[in-house]
Image (cartoon, rainbow, N blue to C red; front, side, top):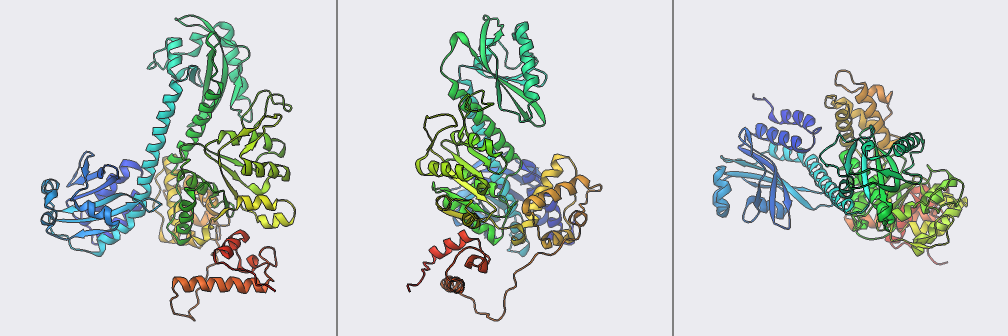
Length: 633
């Protein structure tokens, strides 16, 4: 089949291809490039820096896909691409230019080559996409445009696959740790059938790990069957879905290797809309001191399951706009330190997602990141939630419980909506930041922790300080490195990238084919002010996908009379382009004028930040960076 306009055909096909993921995305992308440019071979490969090699993720030659293979970069055109981190084009005489790469070039009759490097969000090269042809291939706009179109989406997918492999590897390592525990760990489905158990449970119960039809009742006495059923009903009826229940006294276990009494816990969790139960049992005759280790492993398993779910939902900071590039620069600048970070931004801009990226780019990435919304937990419970409690410390405290700070030991704790924290707890938080220690509720025992604190707020903390609702000393402890998350209305074309990500996510979830966004729909999305930011965009797309009857999204109906967002108009009075130093001086003088106009007051309604329409913390950072000082009288 031929097209009168191949580039236009590729753009149309790419919009549908971009909704795919994994191997299928790369296969369809490679086939579309080959068909559009009428070349012999196209492939995408992942870089292994340590081995100085590339491993193909998808390689199409003619009409056939080749199995994945690894090749060394030495003396190849791809080596030039990786080292230069840009597009490389050899229009002809390829085998003469790379005589040491004769094996591969001869095999595919390579005469010309085009390659482009792929990067992660930190700017590091992670792979490349390459084109090989048996005839001369001159430089054309079509090739450059196609590589530009695919670059961002291919980079995001490659990063997603790398991250997913890392998570699965960590899950495998955790499974190895669980198998090393001397307690019996047994997973049950909602019917009571054993679906997974560790090696200790296999040995103690005499269960074949490949037999998934064994019911737990086979290994229980009559009294223990009734007790377990009662506990399952109790944990299902708990509105707050507590993490576990202690089993009263013990369960009587009947095994081919001998009967025994076991103490332990029952927990309940939901995965893929199905309920599962976990029994943690300990043979009373072989009781050992493994309580802390078991609890820690279960907590890490839960956080790992949530993290893996986030990755599978394509948990990415999507965007190519200048504000997002500045944001990512700040993220990776601070990630490798232990500095406390305060993330400012409107509701729905993705502050927690920014915090997760800081954590994942930090040396603490292999430890948990524990998140808590300070405004979503009742004031009476927030202290226990943060610092834990001992048994009997208050009504309902029937067992000792770890707090979020202890769970995050070695990792990161994310305190969302920090402005909602009471003054009493702000004092305790200040101590944790200064001394890295705290006492659980009802305990005099001091617990030391090694954590990195990231806080976030959509409120003006300077105003809360003036109203005596937030401690000034805590603010300066948190605001070591402020990060401003831009609202969606200031991110230009990013709204289309994010919308396509949500379309892919929700259409896949309900198995519904959705047509690519039309130009009118794109214009509408870009013109809307998005007061609810990314969260509002996500809700709009989800509703639209659900209601789409013919594959077309009703954007107009969902937004209902969208109003264009305000845009900044650039003046044409001064056409001279300023240098970097001139821009900094211009910014410095502009801030000084604002400070003079407000008698050097930074925050408040009559402060310079309000006059400049800046967040006070951001203005304070710029004043320090530009070395602006109040003149002496």
